[in-house]
Image (cartoon, rainbow, N blue to C red; front, top):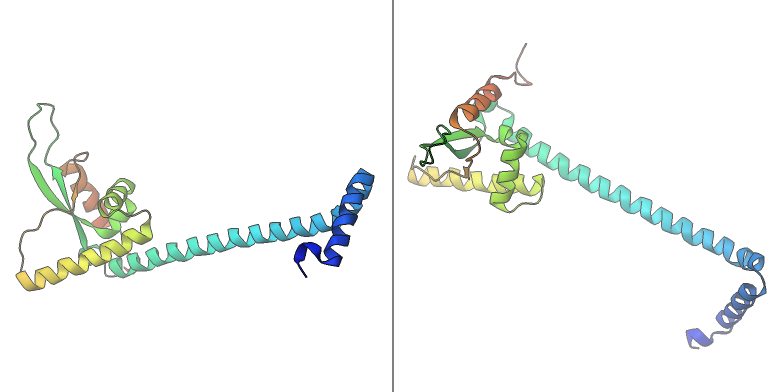
Length: 185
């Protein structure tokens, strides 16, 4: 039989419409338990979706932390670096400033929000997981090129006109000198 003409469904639909017409109290008695079950199921589904999204977010964050740990495990001197082109000195003369390249350890690049956002923009990434993967691939390509071609000068990965050489050098100096978790105190 067709679902709309099924006898049990027709009887239920007739009961629902007569209950709704009879009185609000009758409608509450008829629809109340069903509505509570439907709302309970919807709430449970919402909680499950929320929990799943939090779990996924946590797993993605852990993936970034694990990659950063692999990069930084042997200390700042052994980390892969992000080459950043910066002005030597900012001045108001309007002339094009002298440019220098600073090697920023990848751990510092992730800690500095502005450098991290510039890297995300450079690699068209929406989050840290995508950025970590893009940088991992970039470092592999750079390592392969260095092995093939030697120490050939390469274009800087980032251009940072908003920071000068002294400030970025001081930041990398601080990063290099801070205690490493595996170092003895």
